[in-house]
Length: 282
Image (cartoon, rainbow, N blue to C red):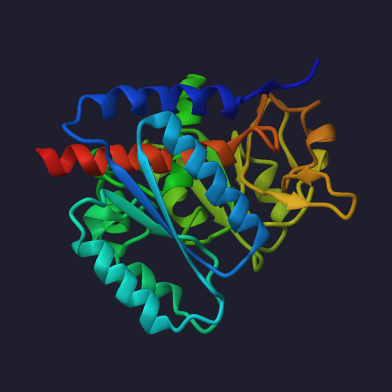
């Protein structure tokens, strides 16, 4: 029979339409700036998608590009300029950065009220406090939560396993699920007997960056699978961290790749920009 597809594309369109309506209520259009360092092809595609989505959401888009050899000081100076620029509602520094630039230093330099990605320690700290305190939550976890809510997937008391412990996805989604009374286990590269954990999950969230790593024998019947991975195979095909073909025949719900979580990350970023504008107005 196969699983119900958790359609990120349809939901992202809905969120963008909501952003457009909220944008029209503001006295001036919000502006999202993106700092792009280097010429990573995946980052360039992602930034183009953001620009197109901004246009549809009634958000002005500004992209500032720098060569990969740019000095860290120059990026920090540009962040300082954006922090002070009252016309900029929110901005992000596209990750990953070249190795000579400290991601932590860059993230911490961003004004928390303009932190559209939700990565600043101030906003991460708020996310830890409670569901109501998730003001500018990290974009990918926020998109995952919205997707689960859209399909009326109850989190209370559910056994959730998160595979991956990054600051961008794994850790914050674990906290946001805990805020909603789920029972959360976080697994990672040092976890012993990973399949024992994943097979227990009512909801399995996978964000490890390994193509088709989760197989059908690692999941429970009728589970909910959220695949955050985006991997390109040698033949050019995009796949997630989950073996979609086999796993989708066993579980209850599953996100596709592409067309799942990735689109919701962009939509959540736009929603954070609108939220920052609304908060500034209040």
